[in-house]
Length: 390
Image 1: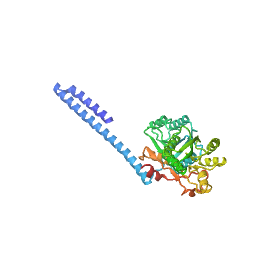
Image 2: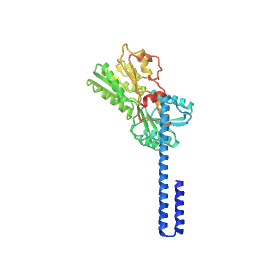
Image 3: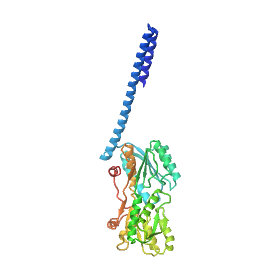
Image 4: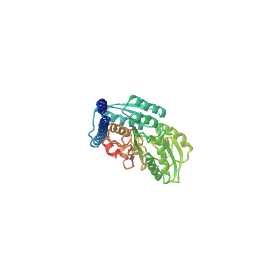
């Protein structure tokens, strides 16, 4: 641009000089035309140079993304970037969320040791969507490089996510998505929760003989994950018209609330043949029936240590059910995905994390697990690229 301005000034000076010394108006006209032609040619050349520079910049961007994607595929990751990542958790009051946070911190510590991450900042909103919006906005003000979000709502955070995207900060949704945000830098790692509870419901109904009374233990009212899992139960029941839901109970995915609520509900019910849960309360259901002195029905498991240990060691002989849960390792996946995005890896906007199932044939593998543990497989950073990005 500076060269273009110099050429134009030179041409103008030349025109003025020729105008003062010209012998005739014809010579002046010819000289002016020549000068104008030269200026036009110079302008065109400058425009071509600018276009070439833009093409070079775009090519460099594509090369950087290709290099990042290749690093993710080969496991030859860069180090020393010093990223700062925020994590906004809508709730951490149960063992599942605490396990998820632990896996996230574990993955972060691994990358802090290599200098890839400088710090992860934790924030918990206690199921308050307005608070979670403020947390995300605070992360934007702090200038973090990426934000991982376990959302308390499918839509309430969309504005804050858009603000982050506009500021160039990618947001990675984990565990309780999907959210409805259409922001350019919104990435989602979701579970097919509807399919999970549909599968559990069908299994329980089969063990009930296709008829009888069923209790549905739900999660936290108003959350997207509860909506999805309830939809799965409804879909599972479509094939079993003789199964009647006699109670729906919200437990916030916590055993203590499930047990107290069931203690109030069970005396009002004559017969209960099955219980479908979303997670965090399967063993509490066992305890509630035991405390009430009632036969234990078919209870869908939630992969928590309390339930799996009871099933493996104490359940009535031949007790047949199915246990499942989303995987708390999604916390670690969120960290790896965030870093890959920042490194220029070509990461899909929508990813699906597999559900973990435990059957009667493999429950003995969990006979000695920790009470607060969750029976789910764990992976590594290479697995993320090989499975979530495909």
